[in-house]
Image (cartoon, rainbow, N blue to C red):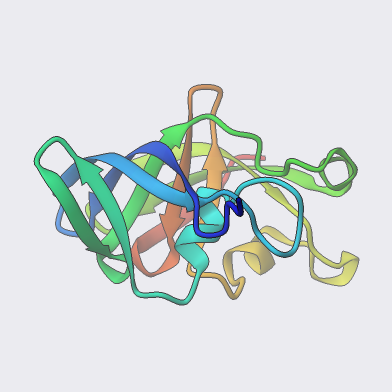
Length: 152
């Protein structure tokens, strides 16, 4: 039997741009076409679909990605391929979102040598970027960022 369409639940906290917080489980695909392993939350958030499903005790909510400021989950490695992790540059960031909250952590960036500045990373094409700490991983919506300070 095929596992096409099968999903895996990931516990997450979603902070909306207006400050409302939602807790529940987000569904990621068990497989992706471009590499081995399940889809990551970052890949889900950067997919072109404008909504994702969040299941909580009170049922399912379809969340608009445009209204999401931050998604937090358990700490994960930003890159699951050891060869890629060795090529990535780790940068410390203090990110302030539109509501005034500041999140500090680090990001692993993989950029061409001629475009490997922190500013190049922040100006990337994806809707969300990832910062991590030892305790949590946060997925930050670029449209809701007020300012970023490099910590390195």
